[in-house]
Image (cartoon, rainbow, N blue to C red; front, side):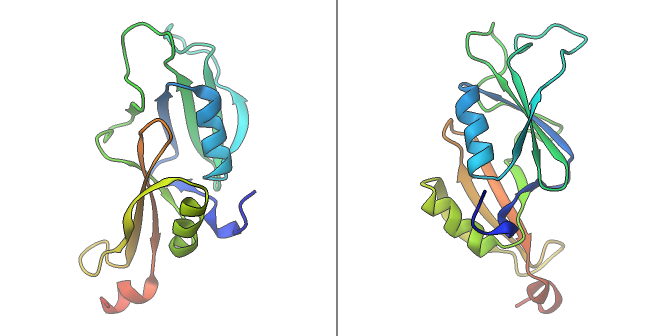
Length: 156
């Protein structure tokens, strides 16, 4: 359990994401220990046979968002490590955090590679949104996002 309860993550603008990983136990540990997601079990078999059948774990994050981690180790040619199956897979997977400053400190203290410092948007549709970009142990770019209502209201 994380020292700050506001760090528990939930997916941003999505309820489900499926991510291929080269080392399933490592990925489960990362999502549990760094993002405070809970392991809920093995994903059910899909109606269409896939290379990941039997090598998939479901994690639930904060408000019920589901992350399915599936092993691509030893599979036939297909998704590369860190492949994210969703409509906008070119973008990092975003998780919401209630306290970005604490989340940034937690990631750094946990030895996670954080890219730059938290960035707060000052204008536009996403004014007040603060983003921290970080990298999983297998190289997948992820982000924690949060909102500062004062910035959103004043633009400062």
